[in-house]
Amino acid sequence: MHLADAAHLDVLGYENKFDRRMSLWGNFALGFTYLPPLVGVYSLFAVALATGGPPSIWWIVIVGAGQLLVSLVFGEVVSQYPIAGGIYPWTRRLWGKRYAWMAAWVYLWAMIVTITAVADYGSFFASSLLGIEVTKESELIITVVLLVLALLLNFAGTRVMSIIARIGLVAELGGVVLLGLYLLIFQRQNDFSVFFDTFGKGDGNYTAAFVGAAIAGLFLFYGFEACGDVAEEVSNPARGIPRAMYLTILIGGVSALFSFAGYVLAAPDLAGIVSGESPDAADPIPAILESALGPVGAKVFLVIAVMAFISCVLSLQAAASRLIYSFSRDKMLPGHSWLSKMSKRQVPVNALLVACLIPVVIALIVYFGPVGILLQVTAFAVIGIYIAFQMVVLASLRQRAQGWKPAGPFSLGGWGVIINVAALAYGLFAIFLLGKPADGADLADPASWTVLIGLVIVLGIGAVYLVVARPDRNSTAPAGDAIEIAEKLRAANK
Image (cartoon, rainbow, N blue to C red; front, side, top):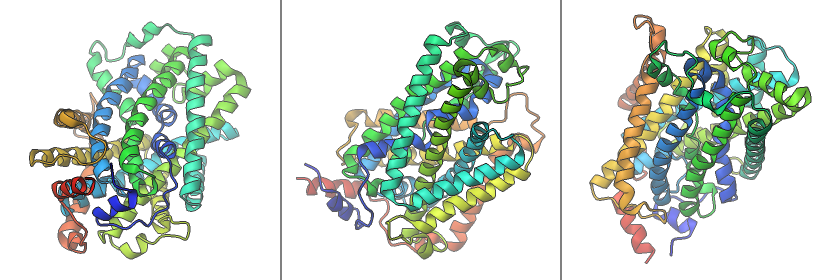
């Protein structure tokens, strides 16, 4: 027997203010569309092939396995703490206020930047669909349109958000799986052996080239956290959300493999794409689709792709706004009263505005910035998200060392510590790959350190604000109570 949703929330010190209209299917759809395989593969397919060639597909397997471990750790945490906001309330209850503030600060900026990156990548496919020439101006305009459209859909409420996420999920799975099968069976131009062919990448030292292509997998598989961001809008979240999290990884992994493999095997000029000599090397997928499906079929699939990008931006904005709301509800941000305001449709309306307007500003920075800045923006977003995730994993391991035994209905049992340690090891490895300069880069050039410089700036500003303003003193919400809450839940469930 386990507590009802409102009773569980009451033990955690909160009252239910959200509309619990999201089902397990809707919650899974939100996590899946947060950064779905179609979006992730589409966004970095050309970069992956140019850096590591076809073997870069194996990063999908490596990263999927690592993130599955992380999702299992998160599952135990959210099962005990099904609270809106995800990263912030989890780290707060597992460690403390100041630790949670830094984790949420880093994650918030990483999410904001991810929203910008996904909308920007989506602008290329929207341009192809509409027959618009891709210029910096069209890229900016369409990016802003996608951001505002997602905002308006989010304003409509949890039910509409859940419906759009499910539509995006169906379009994504249908498009990715069916198209992947079609390309693999009927349009294969290359042999499966190409996934073990380096195409000369690395000049005899392929390890460096393969490591450089890691971003292809690392930009996938972190949407599962979004399932927990809306925990107070889900029915029976303590049991359902952990399941939605690992399903996001498993189904997303299979979809990503179908997608990546299908495009590689159907590419009519794979060698030219990998070497950069093909005129379509910078954006090969539309050309591959047109070659395999014809102009009409390519247009149909571009419609599906644009739907997936819109759904993705919608889910990202929703997750970011819930984090801002959770942060503000505990009086941890400037303007917390304004940011924690709920609309009549029971959505954090002002937090949603912030989750749209700041990405618009970053899109302007990309517009005026140098060539290649979008990839650097993407890398910053990913490393920030990985750091925030690992702060949860580390806090969980610390609590286990102090005697914490998770009390939610989802439990790893005796495997908990082993999985927790393995998840931490994987995360640290991923952070190293994301932060290190590219092989052969000029270490004296500040551009080689753009990702780390951006991270240091975000961490520095957050640390200064934390020390000077002491937002942790403004909040009376509980912290560091994992063991105590576990005991209360066990007692209440007897």
